[in-house]
Amino acid sequence: MASVNKVILIGNLGRDPELRYTQGGQAVANFTLATTERFPTKEGERQERTEWHRIVVWARTAELCAQYLSKGRSVYVEGRLQTREWEDRDGQKRRTTEIVAQSVQFLGGRDGGGSGARSAGAGPDAPPSDDEGAPPPPADDIPF
Image (tube, rainbow, N blue to C red; front, side):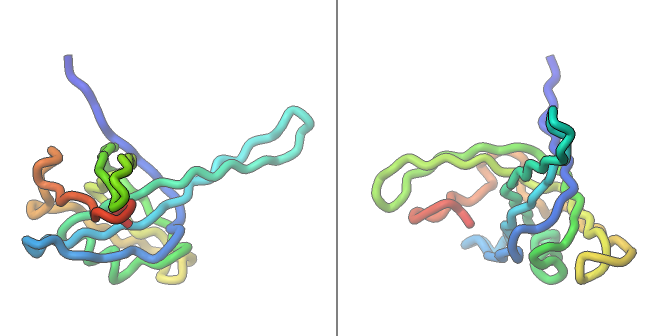
């Protein structure tokens, strides 16, 4: 039976992207993305619930995200869910679930408003979709 692992999000960056390079020279950027759900309560009051997502972007797309995105900017992210485990410096097992982006589309202007969109796809130089191509997380903490 076939399976699907696909995530589509539109939200705002919670912080500026952090760009790093693997030992092999591959660019990788990390940032957080907030999506907000608005709904009425039983009493008719408007309520908001914000969900935070960890985003990982590879190759040229990572470099473009680091160059053009900043905290508060709206983006469209399409990718897959991935959960990783590692041990931190203290020997504690750590676990994180993140979205590995295959496509990032910049929404609005540089300041997050205005018009226009810029697209950054993963392209042919993106790492393989299995975990063998991903570098191990830093030993000290969550990978961003």
